[in-house]
Image (tube, rainbow, N blue to C red; front, side, top):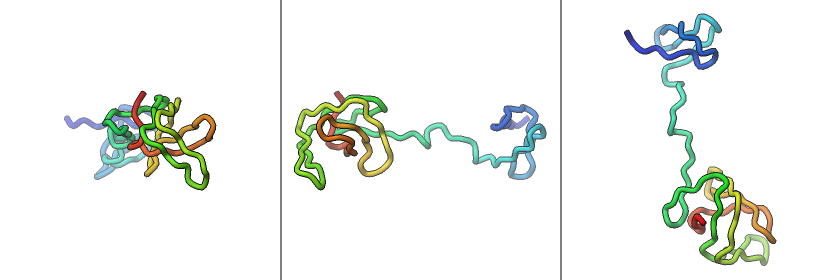
Length: 113
């Protein structure tokens, strides 16, 4: 017997396969076999300058003087930043720095504290 997954909408175990689709007779939900959520595909992995994996809420330390674009301010070496958020993109750390405000940083210029 083949392993037919339970319905992702109502968790019914009475699903059946109809050609390339799975169908739930209880809630009439239809989905393709490749629509199943993949566990590791949507995980954002951000590493610091030393290769340590960063997570939401970590504290980091700046390892290089960073000029703030459009301003005369500079984020100095050794500045600690608490409670970071990880985002997708070139500047993959979103944070607030005391005395400067909200900023986006590149992970290659920080290390995990």
